[in-house]
Length: 581
Image (cartoon, rainbow, N blue to C red; front, side, top):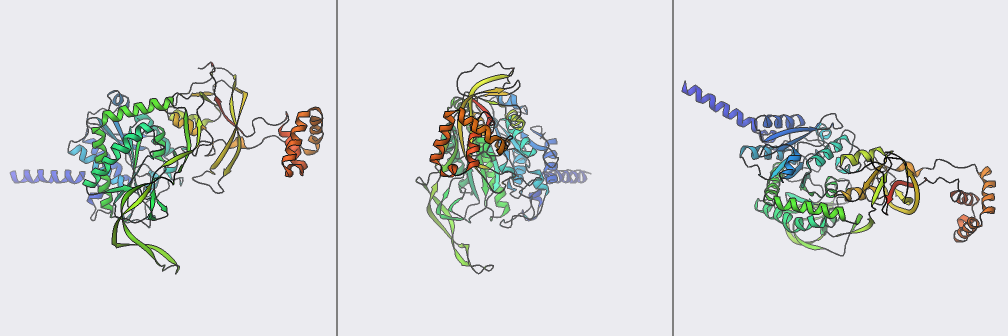
């Protein structure tokens, strides 16, 4: 009887242990990534037997399924408001934004289990894990990354709307993006990690790293990340056997010998959006050609190191975040776009492989190749200094007409404080007229992006209506406010076509009718006549075109649309008393 009893216990123990193994671990060659169903089933089983873990569902993604957030809390407190009152840090880990880059999905399943099993949850850090972000792409399983060494099958980069979700954060076209922004603005993490797999050159490292570009990060946070957090992550990963280097974006394509360039993640990207919220952010980029199991274990070790340092520096990180928020609320001038400063570079040690050119078996022309039998170590340049190309001084407040509903919705989602006008009100304020812009000839992520935007400010009286929104620029989220509402911003709402309807003229004239009206206007208004003559003297094309001259008179007449090309968001630049509700 005892033998039967012990056999039963052994069987139960074995079954329980096996049940805790991830699909990745259960696979024969560790070259398998979990399916969506396996991911959710695994976390549900883990949550049922671990009171320090809880699952939350947010929103409805484009494929109709909720976004699952795994929360690990040592004290079993799962209310984000209480967690903040307890002065604990929140680390948010995002996985599968590109499901063909799945290491984070499998590493996080291992990581969550081990923290619970070994009773090593941090005391001062609550860990939030997005189980798989791009659910749509995860369900669309197959082989699409021909340049990648495993796993045997994986998800697709685009979601159900064929959007790259890591280009969607400012525009938020996807319902999935709405759900993640809800998570970010509810849990308010101090640190954000987005797990990826690289493309590009071949080299010896299993993992490379993108951190928020130092010159566009809040300087208070940049000081800590560049001098303390990032160096410590590099040091610990080397001890783990996974020496890292910054993400290999070559100055000359896939050839790192000419130097590498710091990645500029503007607000369309997850980490660029996080930087607007003063969140310290990292992107792991495991190397596509390394074995899948090594990529998974390197991601696991990186997460463990990030948690450990966050726990060690929890109080410091909290204080720095608060100081950064306060500094941004007082900040007056904001960068709207940046460019690489090619005159400044550091040097780093780079471990690569000899490369060269040989005859292509496809075209018969020279093609690049790497020779892994010839590893090398050399010093290369690291270009990681960016300078602002466009800046803007914030107004005291912006006024957003309620007609622009998606902007209002996104601002509410991002916890922007914005009272409404209590009554119809005529305000003396500054408006922009769009002077010039370039538009991409082909769509990018569903939009024809505007660039090189020129604005002409004009002081005027404009009527706004009861219910229109006032956004004061004394908020910790000033970066998000200014960078989205100033049209010249690289990822402004104007750049992403939110305001394209103001670019169309609604009224016009019949030339044969307006000819007489225009002549009468010129006869009665000597200043208008002089203005036309002066412009004709400067512009031969205008002087030679009857229609252009007629249009010039129209645009300078009382009949011209005052709202044509007028950016609808007003800028209050002088103290103004408003009746708000």
